Length: 329
Image 1: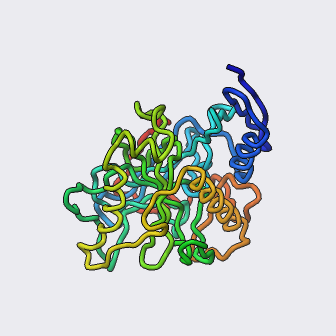
Image 2: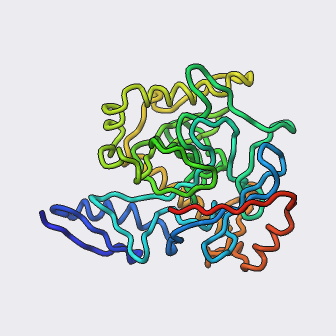
């Protein structure tokens, strides 16, 4: 088998097994090229807890291994690296995923997009902490649920298929791996497909992915692989997203494409578009819609701040309870 090496516009080495036709190389380059805010991946992150779990003052901040506070929204790169070289096997891009909600849990945890450094917090509705109901036969979230960093569903961008605008959040991702992750964990995933959910009139894409360390990761490379090897899993995913708000008195959610999952190529196009919108956001070329873009690594962003400024943000938060956790990725 011939191994072809070529270099993307980001300086990443791309390793391809087998013949590498020009059209395929172009496809890989296009998938990688939009990700201009590309930095060396930290091999492990720390999370620092402020406040108590199951309380409105709970916050989970992120730090690098060097102890620098960062934003999981803006500072963790979308595309994962290993050391100084980015390997893409068989035209596969590996993404970082920030886990917000562990599998089988009910507390609705999310990146706080409208707070400095965007810690993870529990969502609050009408002054009350939010928990998703157990919609029979499901228990809590049925996957590890989180977001792809450095993406943004622009509320001023209308999707051509659904005629709905973005929900003003990072794009959501469901890790269908077997490991139960923890909130704040950063894992590497490969994308398998995407679901076009419409939530109260807003476009709310759901990326379907799998942790690259999962035992099944090598065998799951597409939505069809999931359908074949895990019968009922995709149907359960649609059912969960359709009904999870019904116990709160809200109507069922609807879907674009008649509720059919789109393939990974389509998913990557959507991810690239949301990354493009995110770049405009942090470069102040788009309306921020209340989002706080403070970061320490996006050099071309007017929102970049110093390490000392970031530390002041965290130290100003209530410190009645503080726990530091290491996450190795």
